[in-house]
Image (cartoon, rainbow over all chains, first blue to last red; front, top):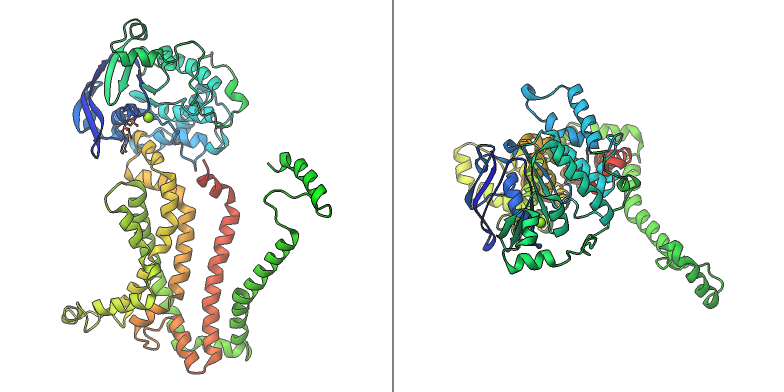
Length: 267
Length: 300
Ligand SMILES: Nc1ncnc2c1ncn2[C@@H]1O[C@H](COP(=O)(O)OP(=O)(O)O)[C@@H](O)[C@H]1O
Ligand SMILES: [Mg+2]
């Protein structure tokens, strides 16, 4: 029941974004796609989520021919880089969306949905914020709403596109630990896109280093550090391996609210 | 900004022009402000308010009674009915067309997209009279489809279908123009999110896309409606001016005016103006009622 990606290639017009990507990850694995901007990470993630279509290649997951399923039948929880929350809905409605649009036969009752929303709000530590609108939340809070919304559909896999990219350094670090412990509790196969090597090495069970539409190396973090397969990998990992160094492009533009800086150690 | 720069500004201002209060960098001289406001007020009064007032006062020049009689005359009633009917057909059509066009342009990538955006503006850039003539050229008795239409016993020009066609054409851009920038700005992230959460096309449209654009849509529809009821040029060409049959309100106003029936002309014009005012009023009330929600769908 593992995730098997075989020879996935994708072009945009003439430009090859993915040039034959293959990898395997066991079920329940926390897999990081690590690479510089433009290396094709998002494209691969969107193909996994059904939002983009591969030109060639196969993907198998949970015993299914994954690419033959349309996005809405995959039950792949997707967390977008810019959150993509429904701006006209409250936080609670956002989280409930995936359940409330189910056909009547499989739709939980109103009370059941409300209970699930409360549970998820607690899980992402946003109790009491269900009535707010996305525009009334900080970046870190929006990020967690997006995660709760993705988790509400009881996803088969979790796909995260630079989920902490727009947050400031402190919040990133906190959320990182919180996400790892959440993964351990839920056991979901998770694919996590990042361009931050510290983040990838710290969080993931396996890291796939991508460069120009190819996978340079896929290995456990320790293996990657000990035996980089190419100069590119060595250089990319070495760039700022010093602990505590955070890349400058963490655009800390979003406002930070007090709740963001509280610990996430409980989960 | 203002608070941090104010002290500095003050010192400079004190030294150079001691009489004036300190001003924010974007502030203009008070005299400039007064002059600009005065110009705006005079302009609005002269070009917007006065004509409107004149319309109503001319209509009532010989008392309510005369105005009412002019309106209850059969031809006037037919004109009002026809105008409402045309708007009732043209506006929903343009709402659907406008939505469909904006949806395609904002949510999909395809060749010729910019061309399509330009094409949408054609009804605004071409004189309505020319648009009307084009319809006559196509559907008129001597037109390209004239023979075929006659053989099939169909009448488009000088009849309701022609008036509706011309109105749809002239008012097409209102909805689309209102929606396209907003929908492009909103992108397709939310629709994609809905898809990954299991939503099909319908639920996505009705629960995600439509709520995000409903205010712009409403605004476009109101503008479209105002113009549909007021359109003169294109309709004038295709209608044939048959009194009590193909005369819409604007055309009827012209006929009456040319007949020196000023009370009648201005009475019908007043109804048109009232319809437009109601439209604006509805819009303002809605904007005021839902200010929070409107700003929430624009910001994120
Ligand atoms: N929709 C698209 N149209 C055209 N080119 C695209 C599109 N999406 C991505 N690309 C290109 O594909 C390459 C890989 O993009 P992406 O997968 O977003 O990289 P990453 O997420 O690693 O930064 C980039 O060069 C990008 O410009
Ligand atoms: Mg990316």
